[in-house]
Length: 348
Ligand code: ADP
Ligand code: MG
Image 1 (cartoon, protein in one colour):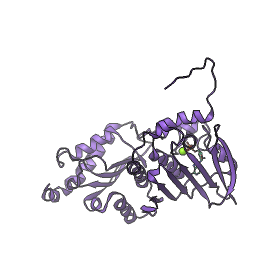
Image 2 (cartoon, protein in one colour):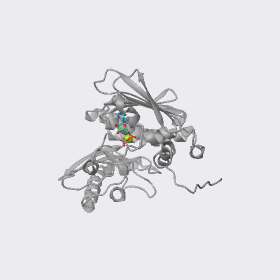
Image 3 (tube, rainbow, N blue to C red):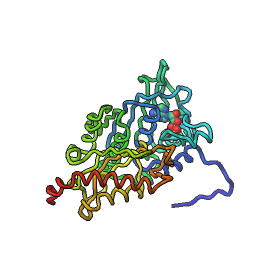
Image 4 (cartoon, helix red, strand yellow):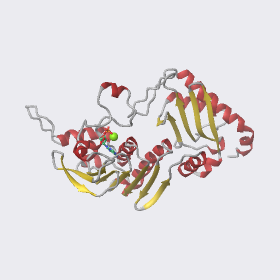
């Protein structure tokens, strides 16, 4: 490849600047879905419908019934560093939304063919904006749409062949995408989701409010076998509560692919947490086997500081020891109670 250097400094075109930023946020269809779903959740949607073609590479669409976007704001929604979620540094420090950087739509629209259609709460009409041309110029036109927002993304990386090369088969990309949907559906029982791939419904989850409905969703997302071979944990201890489903040792897997842990509603991956869980299973699992679990830790932020970065899957507890020991002892106890039964079943 050739490297062109100009001796003078010039500003990058908005599109190129966005494409460079996209390199960090947009890796594959699954990362696009994550950003779009987080926007829908931030908009207070109670229903989200996802439509995917060819693993999401050809086309993916997210429709929600959230608060929508004001017609005049539509071009801004696609421009970089524009957000409705924070205004000040104080807001940033107290941010509760999943997004706040105002980069996702700008990034995605610079590497795909994106159409954003929205009708704001209380507005009589819907409008649509399409990003086009070199400089991210946008064009707003009237459209038909109920309250809420639809984002359609076609031909991901059509104009960035180097990135397109890294995409895998439709099947693999779809697998990643479905996993993102699964995770978010586990984090928000109150929201209904449907997921279609190549016109076929692959997930249809109605909002779950009762314990029974939540259990049904767990069954739909993790399989009914897991539901049958798991115990429900629900333990309170001062500022900490651990709730969820933990698989019996007989339902272990050879991979760590079905382990979900949420802290105050957000999915996280944390070494301290992972260690506590591993320890709790240590006596009851064969070497090389991994437990299956869907666990929700609620931490009173007033007592135990949880520093969760909105865009990262990391968490920092002020009192890590307390959290670790609580998780360990809760699970250890729950598993000990079912041990007599599992010892018989453990035939593999
Ligand atoms: P961020 O989420 O970090 O603010 P995005 O680029 O993802 O940045 O979105 C830009 C803005 O567009 C958001 O701040 C929000 O105001 C608006 N927006 C995007 N998607 C939706 C949606 N589904 N419903 C309502 N507003 C949305
Ligand atoms: Mg966002």
